[in-house]
Amino acid sequence: MKPIKLSEKNKDFFSHVYEVVKQIPEGRVTSYGAVAKYLGTARGARMVGWAMNGSHFHPEYIPAHRVLNRNGLLTGKHQFSDPSEMQRRLEAEGIEIKDDKVVDLKKHYWDPGIELKYE
Image (cartoon, rainbow, N blue to C red; front, side, top):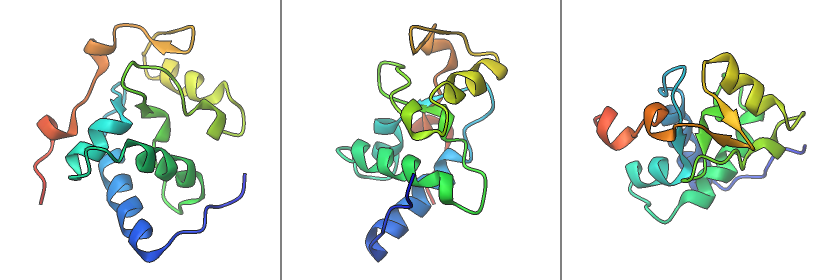
């Protein structure tokens, strides 16, 4: 994987995404769209995906494996050096995965719009 070149505007957005994602508790997951909506860009799910792709080059640990598509699919698995790594990390946190999808998404779903207060 090559690092993504970022504009200053995208760099700021990515930083905000990383701050939200770092707050997802172990054993919980959220969606690209929920993070985007929390940051005031409801249609920015794809940009959150780009941020997760770039998170592997961030100096701090970003738990990108906890961000999924809205249906609980592990759509970001190919952004890891080993595509099965995302599933392994989630299973290590007690989340059951079947056919690249979180089983009982409702139970594990973490919504930043409910859990966090935007400052």
